[in-house]
Length: 189
Image (cartoon, rainbow, N blue to C red; front, side, top):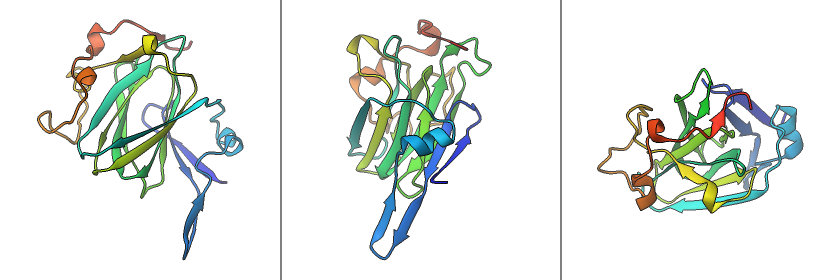
């Protein structure tokens, strides 16, 4: 098996660990193989790769998602550095609606997280100069680019950065809370 897949506390969110083959030169890994991922139940088509660099430790990106008809699954990995990664269930009617799962994704662990449609995604960098690569299953649409306030007390994420030390975009400082958010996703659809 070239990839290991395990579910988090919200089972639709998955951690994937592609096998890494190392020797005295370094390593080789199939970071993504459609066939290998399909073998563990991840059978979706990705249409775009995105790459971000965050210079500062404590950079918060999120909580972001795209609404239908441009909703996106995301497959997130970190080739350099480390992030505390979060997925928040936005699917109305879900038994885990408004709840979140979190994990550390890092170059050292060589792990990835699959954040499916219906979830908001966010992260905070744990190291300076952290790079994040993520595949998405739909193209970007500015009209469907949405978010939830990263520190919404109703979601109650235990971020490993204080509000004072968090490095945020202007957009992420003014996102709506979950209670203010329109209902974009329905569980089971």
